[in-house]
Amino acid sequence: MKILCLNGPNLNRLGKREPEIYGYETLEHIEAQLQHVAKQFDSTVSMKQSNTEGQLIDWIYEAEDQGIDAIIFNPGAYTHTSIALRDCIAGIETPVVEVHISNVHKREAFRHHSYLAPVCVGQITGLGTFGYEAALRMFLQSN
Image (cartoon, rainbow, N blue to C red; front, side, top):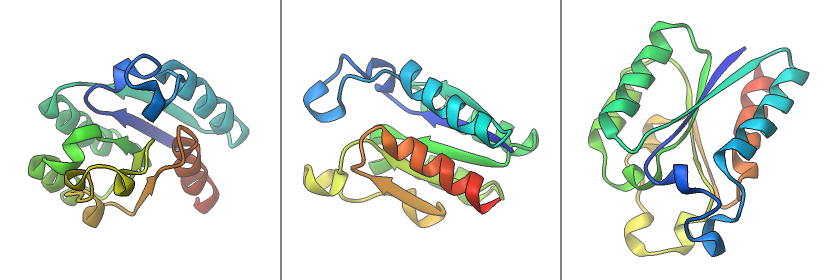
């Protein structure tokens, strides 16, 4: 199984940005953990991050066109603002799971709404960086 893990704005700063909310693990650490789990299932994970909405949209369409089996997506703040990402996900067959490190429902009111959740197969929130692994295992074990 081929899985793409996408990360949106500011996630390149994991480990440095607001560690009291997001912890000290970096994207590199998350990627290493996902690679370790994927290898056990004879699968691959590729990790990408962009602070640009259009780039994320391009990667989602490319993933579908290249036969990627599933997408793990932490859209960051675009969760609460991007109708463009919502429409992109709605327009593909590749399943997408939305992941958030913090529990967005325990934070500011504007973070409680996700434009993406209704077009994703699920949403994982508040499990820290383990949420990425939970999404990965869900895809791998349902295959």
